[in-house]
Length: 292
Image (cartoon, rainbow, N blue to C red):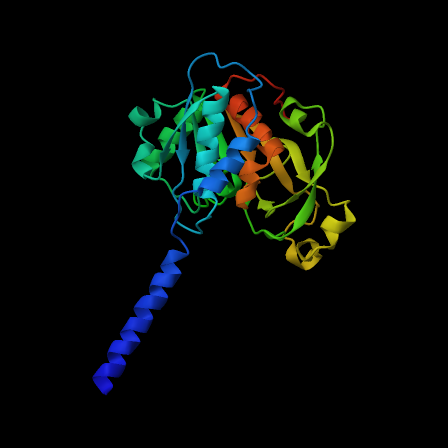
């Protein structure tokens, strides 16, 4: 009887462990999700590429794994193909950050990567890539990396320090620059969206990047939800940037924190916003990016 109990116990542990591991397993998008993306894609890009563009979509996670990663990767693949703006190649292998390999790409898109800590050689390759005139694109958890690498955190534009507004929250997003070309898809109107919203710590600063959209803390509904309470906020200045752009040497950075919820990747306006930002990072869409 004792031996039987031990076996039953081991089975229970294995099952529990399997269930836990399954939470972090990425599954391909369903046919319905792909159809949703297809129906939301813009017909064309805001700029014509100067030449064929290729993006490395990087998806490695050392921390939390977002279920929306595979959907996002598919959306960006389809977005580039539909508009002719770029093609994509996906990887989760840190050895991709070598000078020879990176030379094949025009931009790197960090798609909800978490807790990345590149080696010294990989760090230098990434900095050389960006500062040499290429593009860096960050989506959602791309700011949840480089905690031990100051130059990397500065390159992205900030470090994640919590999401007071969780995935089930509907918030108001304001356009810090309604007339900016990357915000053209919103028609000059602020908007509500259901998604997880981050707060950032240094090096996040309006002195370091040009903020295009941010959380509207004047909206009573946004401020009233659980996340907006003072005890949940690390920042006390009410500045919760969502989208920004910046220069990194001769290169360009576009970051947008939207993208936790899968449906973000079939939101037509967000896809247009992403596309415009990606083309800016690629160097095909010349838009104002000076720090104000």
